[in-house]
Structures are given as C-alpha cells and as structure tokens.
Length: 340
Image 1 (cartoon, helix red, strand yellow):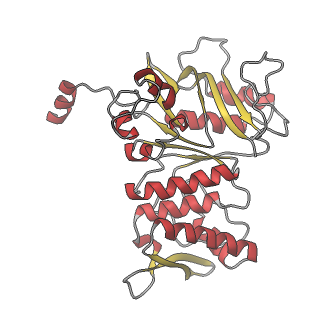
Image 2 (cartoon, rainbow, N blue to C red; image 1 turned 135 degrees about the horizontal axis):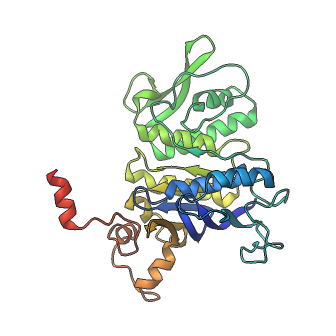
Image 3 (cartoon, one colour; image 1 turned 90 degrees about the horizontal axis):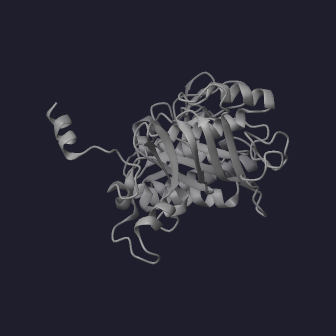
C-alpha cells in the first residue's frame, strides 16, 4: 500500500511555506497552537479533493490568513508505492501530486474521506446498536457496536475481534475477557472481566487510557482501515508504561501496510519510544507568526556530531528546548503567571 513520504504546504492555514518527511508511523510534537492539528487537517483536506474544482473550494477556505490576494494555496505530497517515490520537485506538469493527483491509481487518497480521531473516553464502550452497518466516529462512538458485530459474526470477523482483545490484554494484563450485555432493545454495551474482581464490570468503570487503547485497536483493525490514520493527542489518559506496547503495536500495523499513522502528542516519554527513529518525529513550531515543519533527526544533526551520544533520553532533548518545538516562556514570565 502507498504511504506518504513527504508533504509540502504553501499558504495553508497557519503555514506559509513548510515541508517535512513522513514515516509509516509519524509522531508530531510542538507547543500548543503551533500548528500540529493544521498538519493533520492538511492531509484530511488533500483526501477531500476529489476533483480540481473541489480542490479549489477546499483550499480557498484553508488559505493562510496572511496570504496576499491571488496567492495560490497548495498541499503537495510525495508518496511511495513500495518501489519508488514520486517527486515533489518535478515540474508542475510532471509532478505526481499538485494538491492531489486526481485518478492516479497509486495515490493513497483515492475514494477516501479521512477524519481526525479525537476519542472521548466517556463515549467509548457505551450502549450502542441499530440497523445498518456500524461506523466508528471521530469521538469514539461506534466501538461497542463494531466489536459486538465482530464477536457475533463470521469466522473472519471473530478473528478480528480476538486480535483486538489479545492486543488490549497485552497492554492491560489485568483484563481477562471482554464481553457484552443488553442495556435496551437492540442496544448492548461492553463489559470486562478483571483480575481480582468477582463479576464483570462495565467498560465505563475502567480507566480512560484503557478505553482509548480499545478504540484505537478497533479502528486500525477494520477490514478496510483508512489509508492514513489521524490521531490527536494519542497519549490522552495513557500511563507512560503503556507507551512501549502501544507504539510497537501501531508500528507493526504501519509496517504491514494496513495504514499510515500520524499522531500528535505533548509527552516526552512517548518521544522516547522513537529513539531509534528520530526521523519519524516531526517538530511543529511558530516562527514570525507562521508554522514551520522539521524532522527531529535534522535538528539533532545541528547540535550533535555524527555518532555523538545524546547524553539524555530523546524526549528530554525535546523537552529541554534544544531542538525547538516547546513553549518559549522565560523564567520571569513563568513566575509572573504563577503569581497571577
């Protein structure tokens, strides 16, 4: 399956001119209001452009607020089909994607609508059901319905359900089993059996992090997962000790070619899980009022000699401000905020 290897933005939302490389699993970091969500929206908007006319409509609405009249807004991407990459810097008439290469069968965006997942733990696992096909919504609604259908479905569906639960138990070992109970006519909710508890308990009584993991696992195990999975605040509610299992699982899915994953975070402990692949971390920060993009490995080359040890965990390098992408508050300003 194709995956995006590079993206370039011109006069798009908070970006004037920026580009970066993307990996099968990319972690996006930066201060609040730096432009992390706008990078996810760029991929979302590119997928929404089904025709040249549609691209004009979408990108006109997303034009950088400081752009002059008549300045073109572009989302250009480079992707790999596993054999060779397209090129961003070819002449316009030859470039594989200018906004989007409409109709190219190798494009990762053909006939898809991408959504940014902002899972709400309070919704995940609640009673659901109905007629038609279940659908996982960006807030996490639909997870109960989808898993219940898989559990009671064909052998292939049941195998998908077991894959999700096995991965969940690997991340949260105290969960022994997942089942369903009737709440209302045609509606069922998720319950879990946990070590040390005599009776199953509703999923609503387990931690936010456990519910978030279950939603992510369900989404990536769809029969046809989205070609690019956009996850905002992937660490929300998760204990740092779960990061290794979660990252390993998502990285393996991306490596299989099932989906490409772009996820935002503010957590340095999550960045530590990318110590061997700093090129897969993208730093977003504001300069002169506009958002910029940089790959962490390029930033490291500026401050460290080849082969030089970092001297601290990768997340701490980012948190310290050495590579940028953190709030730029000076000590007097911090003290002033604290006093107020």
